[in-house]
Image 1 (cartoon, one colour):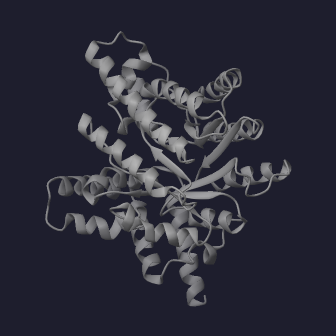
Image 2 (cartoon, helix red, strand yellow):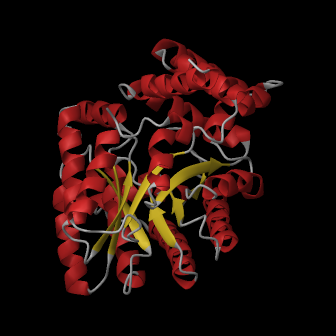
Image 3 (cartoon, helix red, strand yellow):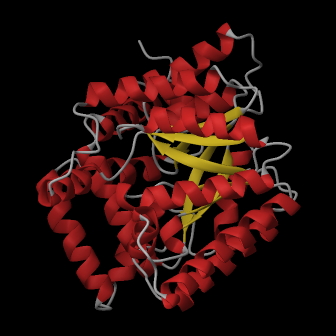
Length: 389
């Protein structure tokens, strides 16, 4: 039996009505065909400003997976979760924009989040995606070592400047910042840039954290090489360890372009690789800190077991756990109850701009085997418990 099955603890902040709505929504998400049709309709209606489309989104997917449309609106969720020992990581979930003005605007928003969260332990991390600060194509060109035109050089300099402004502000205000991982064909350039920021700002402790997708091949080798560089150059490493989120896209692109599939061949291989990532962090805690982003109960318990075997306090500042808001509350609130460091990714933003994120979240729930079924089972168990069944 799983240790993460206390539904009274998991859903203590949810009303019966909220649980029933969540059940209904996960039930819809459980159907792949329905999810695909529904998300396509959703994107179309919101994009074309159909009357009431935004209201429908806000009352369903948005309410389940987002904190609010603004930081201020989201603070109600932040405060409520922190009362129970769970931190929040504001995720400004604007996706798919490629204009320089938007990159500057998002960069300013991230810097506002930093200033907004100074001195507030309820917001332990800042986060952003590399493609929120620059076009995916420029990362790809940099990663391939292509000779850049003068305009491309200027464009990349602006990307580097945005990274540096955010990382420096976090350093000055003692806030940790995580840079998310994205598609493989842009990740080499992102990794290199994040390492530059680590070398600059992680001299005393890990302020800048990179994200490692363990469903990829070669990531363990990358971490080992990065650790060697860190020791030679005298800086600390922070890693967010995740499985990954772009599998189908990655495989399709590899097949279309005739290069080796960069994704582990099976789910079991990904799980083993994730566990190796846990081992890597736990074996190198003198130099490496880890944020284990996972909805997998076995992975979460494995980290707990390894902490115990090493005689670490549950609240050891080098180890964090993380889940997405609206999912896996059974894991999150159990960990918080046992005084582990745990935080939820809390997306926010205007409803229309957040729809691409929400539809991706729905599709990911459909494709992750067992995830939606587990959520439904836990919600039903808690509703039954409340009825006295």
